[in-house]
Picture 1 (cartoon, rainbow over the protein chains, first blue to last red):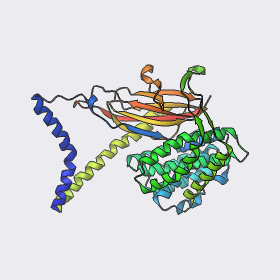
Picture 2 (cartoon, rainbow over the protein chains, first blue to last red; picture 1 turned 60 degrees about the vertical axis):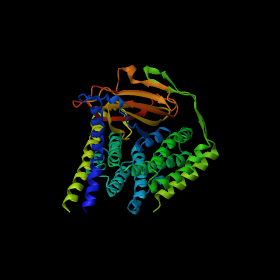
Picture 3 (cartoon, each protein chain N blue to C red; picture 1 turned 120 degrees about the horizontal axis):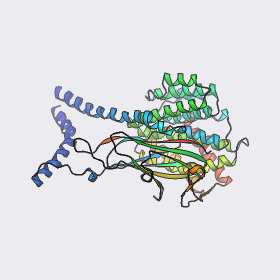
Picture 4 (cartoon, each protein chain N blue to C red; picture 1 turned 180 degrees about the vertical axis):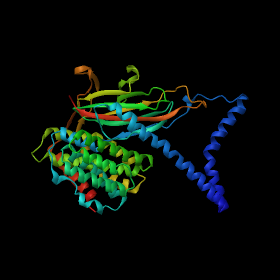
Length: 296
Length: 148
């Protein structure tokens, strides 16, 4: 026991000892009072973030691309209690949050309450407290007829849950939540694009544009692939990445121009196109991946 | 048994003590920075961290064609003005807030879907009273709305 205590004590003091050591050496060499070295010379690790479209942004993009509301496509809320592993809970939390955003953008008030309750239940079972608490649900119920407030409540709750996972170093779980949400967004877009009841071209453009978000998602998954669940997911997502890899997406230089009202506009000559067969293959694969996520 | 209890208590205290510092960033992002998005809808993503003077962070984001976006990049009061640059993925500069009096927000419209890189730097300032670099929360937030 004493040996163990001694080892733990040594490890506990390593960082402090190292710092002291370098400064003492410096003082001995110069023979002067310690002068603080300019901290510009400190080499920091650069923080890198990848911003995926959030469920709220995804629902917004779907609507503005001309999508219609189709309840049949949503993940069934009654299945939420069947997700028992960390991986299935995280993936389906992402899926349900995207569905919650989708129903809310289409002013489906009763569905919003139902999906919020499901999201709350699942988040609580994962220990993500406070993000979707009683107060949030009450606020949502009180503002169901005000879409802007509803979207604000969902985005705030999503931010709290992401912050909770990030601050508690549960990055692998966050990566799985992001994956579930992203896959659900693409699943909705692909299945709405060929119903004949939507804006057609707008949705296809949206689907093609998801190639860039998938690049970011793959990087997030790679960074967390030490986790076996994430490593499995990475393999699943490779199937989607493969289809996007065949897409024609000539990249050109971006320019900043000034639009109406002095607004900054980023302009490029990029042309992204997807063939009908690529769309069909992408839909087949995303349906397969999504089906594996929602099954239990 | 006693020494090990003491040592474990010490280690756990150290580990737990970093928690509230990080939690401050959530509050900072939610209460201070989000306000800067004004009438834009916050996307709900959380990108905030404690950064020190001289430290940099980078963020990659896909901006969707036909949408208006507002970027808000905020730093704690004890930090110098935060500098940010918006670049394409080949690091060609499109905008820097240095040319804009270190404005903390920037509104853009994107013609076609593009991935952009946002590089954020806390410039070296005067440091803290102990002679070390100041540290504080830096949050990067995005709001969107349909193109007007």
